[in-house]
Image (cartoon, rainbow, N blue to C red; front, side, top):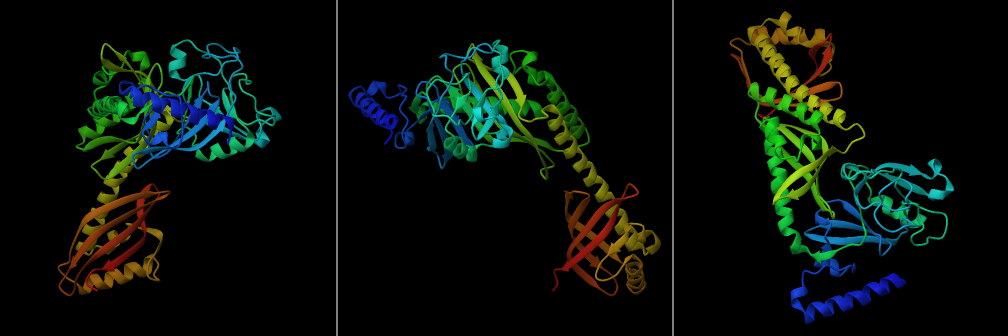
Length: 444
């Protein structure tokens, strides 16, 4: 057993003894992590965690912990010794030899081939300074979590979080760039999990207010949730308002919801991070990327003091997702109109016009386009009073193609049938053309 582990158990015993003797201390924080105590005590930083991982660095104990949340429980899945800045305290300026404190994300990975021997087997670049650090006037850069080829010694880095190569190799399995939080603290405050329930509810309420304001398409309403306009990601929010208002104007049902939500707390702020999903007509969903909302309380009211998008391309990526969702809706309308016109040509027996809906390389059941049109012309001549209806249409977008699936009912003087039709479309001379077609009868 490592010496630090023995120290933990000694502190656990003392802490639990105090809790028994003095029940009023039941919500007092503790710096004592262990696998058993995390069933009821959790780091104060982890208000709520999605089904992923979080990394917490304890500068005082020179420890790194990897947490996972599952089935209502926080578990320590890995822990390791680390070395932080040679000078203690919170990082303020570049070159001060201190490790920053805050909530960060790994934004770049370097393997052994990219690094000098100083950084061991691998490294992760952290997004210090984050938006809060910048507001507080802190500077510096190149704060990494990395390995070392030398024996690990406490408080020996220039500001990075350094681990033994074997430990950084293991921890890397739990890191997803731009998603896994790396929370650096002077020391971990351990509290009963129920203590965080109130803050969790307040943050969920604040997030719901933000989501609702976005879908209303009112930028002024969104501004009321921020401490000032400088805290807003104005470009992405303006783009969102433009699309929401346009979709609403053409009668689209617009809704939105967050997924993969984590709520994380630091000394000076609380962070809500989530994947923002927008839904149109309840059948077209667009995942617009992860967003970070940093909140502080002022006069008993929470205000957003920072707003960032977790992506290498930031607002550009977000706007591209909105544009893709908009194109998907426009594509739906176009494909539905093509199908309507295709049915009308089929019902009328106008086989010349019917053939214009197919691509030149159309193939089905062993027939090319000419063979298919000849076959359909023969059927049209034999089957009079043709009526075709379709319902439950589903349109899915794929690279370079669109697939439409629907239930089709066919009635004529000679034959009736109902089944599922699948049409495969591609662009040809800037028009949607059917290049494959399939049919599955429900009567068989």
